[in-house]
Length: 241
Image (cartoon, rainbow, N blue to C red; front, side, top):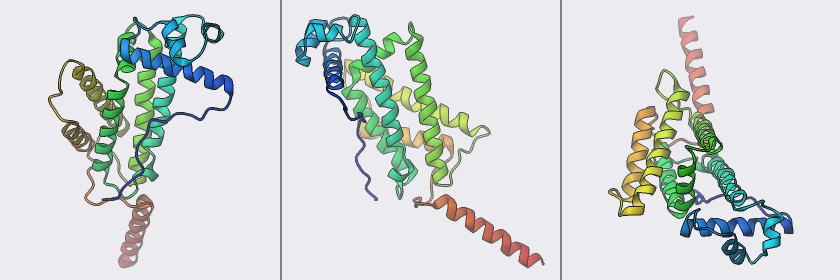
């Protein structure tokens, strides 16, 4: 099986000292939220862990709520950048689509496990804050567009009367299932192992979309298939003449 570069959570490079201070505060806040939840997180604890000062904190945030919102916004931005990197067609060249989706599922399971506190807080706030509802919709829309690009690079298309709708539904089911699984494991061991959950979700998605591959796609597969089809059409035309 072709190996690919490991999937990683994407963080943009730091460019200035003031930005480094902000990132330390956000990292510390995320750490505290992961451990204690939003309600138990305090400005004093965040400042202490960041190795910063209260004055530096209030120079950047009006209050704790402003800090929490910034943590959520950064998570959203990083999730979108991570999705763009993870669904790049070049990354999966030579890897069967079901294997690619299974690997992606394992990666998302790991991310949700590591960032469960942030995800839990986002889920809790979404019903009362339209900002976070829109983030979820934007994430599904972007991942859907990226998945369409990945399929098209292989000459594949969802076998559905409305292919783009089918892709969006598949993405929604995929993320919802993994999110629910991550929240459920807070109260005990999951019914399925990570490997089983990833494999079966991949099967569900590829069968629903009708994009299971009979052979591993190679770079430029779509272009090659198009040329082959043109050659067949030309040959048929010559034979008719």
